[in-house]
Length: 292
Ligand code: NDP
View (cartoon, rainbow, N blue to C red):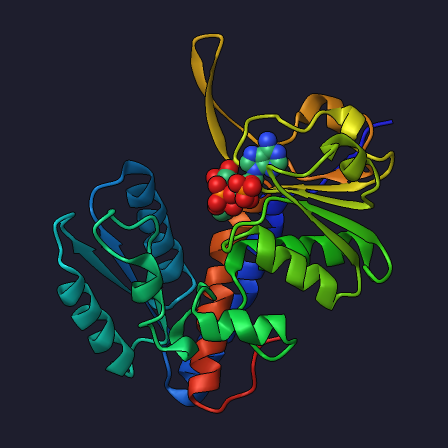
């Protein structure tokens, strides 16, 4: 038996189409165009690609995209001044500072200087606190995309055993909060977890967010489990560059009930959720009904 492959690319295209339809209505009925500002500091090649793709997809759904590319030597004061300007700009509904920042900049300070209402990445401590206490928050895009795919595939998640491997602030922790919010019994595993294989085998829902190529083999997967592979790892195989996840896909696909591939699983959902969050921020800023 082979697992159902969860098609994140198609799912994300559907989310973007819904966002685009809502944006078109906002323009027509309310004369509003949501705007997303993306700030990139430095020349990290992966970040440059992400920022470019974000800009393209933002414009494709009919939103305004404001890209601010700053040199790697930008001072903290200058970056904070730009964020203050964007916080005050009514045409900007979402602000995203591309991480990682160069070492001389304090990421926590920078992220916490964003107006929480415009924090479409959901990393500001106010949004982290709101999510943790079950209040209306801006939810980090990658875990939100994972949750959407899980709900779509499984319906109710209530009572299921969920194991999240990875405890980062960007993926692992907010993922665990979202699963808890949907009444899963949640275990967060990390590099110090004892007998990780056994922990993973208990999971009805297994989310891998580690950053280690193909670390989780099929025999760590409970038969019929839903596997969400967040990992994006670039490796060399047969002399060619290749993207792989944190799960060993070929062995896991034979055991799981459903699995997200890499590429084409979680990745495309992240930008789709960023656009959805920007639309939500725009609606909230203007006291309008939020998208479903
Ligand atoms: P981090 O490096 O911040 O966190 C990795 C986590 O994995 C840590 O909690 C670490 O544990 C844990 N870990 C490391 N080694 C092991 C191990 N041997 N066994 C168990 N746990 C381990 O990574 P991120 O959360 O930012 O990203 C994780 C992956 O997801 C990466 O591949 C990244 O590229 C990808 N990613 C994909 C996105 C997408 O859009 N699809 C978006 C964001 C990330 P400890 O805390 O103990 O060190």
